[in-house]
Amino acid sequence: MMCVTGSRKWIFLVSWMVSCMLAFAWGSTSFAFDGDEDISKDPFVVLFQAKLDEAHAEVVSHEAAVQLAKVKFDTAARLLTQGATSREEYDTSQAALRAAEAQLEVMRQRVVARKALLDVVILNRLAGREIQQCL
Image (cartoon, rainbow, N blue to C red; front, side, top):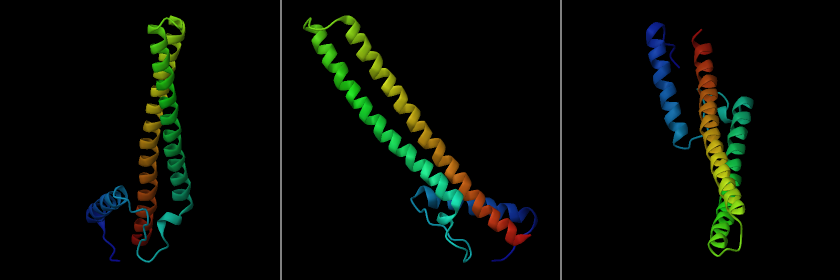
């Protein structure tokens, strides 16, 4: 690869990093850089990918919790209209549903944050290799 110097070096690096981000966003998780080993095998990339996968699993788990809380709330609402349960039971199930929905949103935001962190790690690893080659 040709080594670029000065301000052109940074323009090249930024444009290259953006193209890597787009490739990763479109599902390409395998990066190789000028014959180097595949970046997806980098220990930091593997670690942060595992954290992202864990966050995705937490979202699925919390989606199930929200569904269960909705069923319980719907049941409590129906029983309240029939006079078969107390207002306190209804309020408790409503609060549980709101808490489950809030926790699900937290987990979704965690996925976004971990995805961004993984992107930064990948770009730093790739950019670091580029900078080392030009020094």
